[in-house]
Length: 282
Image (cartoon, rainbow, N blue to C red; front, top):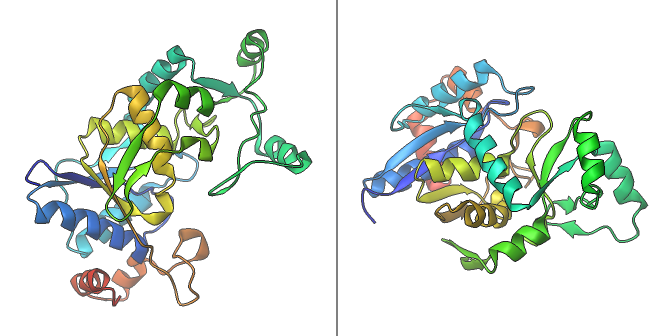
């Protein structure tokens, strides 16, 4: 490997970063730097209802505190919506996406009523309620109802054929996007989704190596499929183990994991924290 290596850290500014985020950023940063490559910072701010400007600033401050420097300007997904819309239009033209009018309550009721709801790595899969709507009903409802766009996973997988990807720990992995079901590619309130945006951005930014937590391992099955459909290159993947708290559970924003900002404000040495994370003693 040489200077062509490109990695990235892509947090969502929906809360403060914790040590698990710090570890992931350090691993991506160090991987690129050790190979003379580039490390990019991308802010995944498509969730307009939850993203906050103060969290963006805190992310920048946290990374600098850890001694992490990025290459080039910070990229914001909110400024790239036209790229995602174009990718979605291409998928529409292929006939592999469909509008979904279901609310979360609708989906929960459908799953509860099913005697054999299919499950994926993260729980029950979308039951396909809107997949079978006629073109006439879709057109009529599109004109008056809010809607998301879902991928018809079976149709898309059949079109793409057999796919695989490589993970540093798992080796060659056969892509199994059907295990995730008809995931959302464009949310009702955002015009895109994590799956679509991250795939488009990694391709557009020339990311060669994706370094991220093991919690996103299964999402790679979807990303590999989208790469094939959109004609994008497939990065190498390095999914690392997650940091866990004293209770053995992975650190998470929603569970109140100690934040890097709190450590900074308490006067801790950021470079020492970074070394502790690298060595596994933090």
